[in-house]
Amino acid sequence: MDRTIASSVAVGGISALNYAGRLNLFIQGLFVSSIITVIYPMISAYAAKQDFKAIKKSLRDSINMIMLFVFPLMVGSMVFSTEIVSLLFGRGAFGLEAIQMTSTALFYYSLGMLAFGLREIVSRVFYAWQDTKTPMINAALGMVLNIILNIILSRYMGIGGLALATSISAIFTTILLFISLRNKIGPFGMKQIIISFIKILFASAFMGIFAKISFGYLHSMIGSNLALMMAIIVGGISYIGVIYFMKIEEVDIIKNIVKDKLRKN
Image 1 (spheres, rainbow, N blue to C red):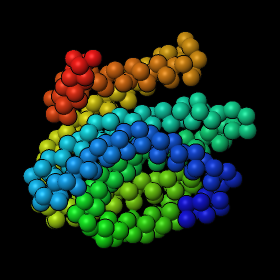
Image 2: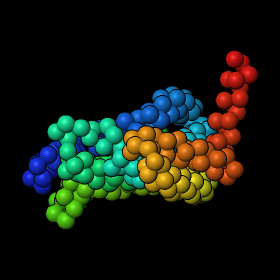
Image 3: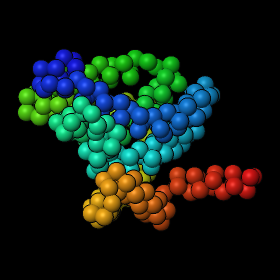
């Protein structure tokens, strides 16, 4: 449906969506897939033992871990959407119009990046309980919403509307999954998750602003691509510095893991 509508919205619309979608999935996969690979066998083992307490803790830790890694990537993709697309694809026949369309799609896809990651981990909890029906129903509702929003938003926003429709449907589906999961296993620490969410949101916003200011300053002295890479490094350091002092439990867990590995080496 996305491709069908994109072909009628703009010339090169399908390519713009494909490039932006691949970037979005690549950025997610760097951390989300790794976390899920580690956590899913643990959740399945706890589900087999009916150990609700362990499942809730593993789920809570996984959600916070995904937010910790994906949130700054999401903000970075939004702040530097044009620069990232220009760096990776801006050459040859991929001109300014293609860069603009693809960066717009990447920006709106990025809005749903965190929702995509959280949806994957919450779905795995249902799979661990041998419940494939609930994720399927939620996915079907999300697909219907996506199609409706595609038709509406593409008329006003073009390619960006198609990407935004995908992100909104992902956020909607994730919220439904959270509600369904709470009904299935009871409270699993949403208060703690929301507190971590706010802290990580603040740190990511600070990172985005600081990185954008750094890019503007560096761009006036060096090339755009080098300025982008240096701004990303500066933003990453600022993010690590902020979250280190915000007392997020998962940061301490990561810090202890790194310390243990250094000691062993």
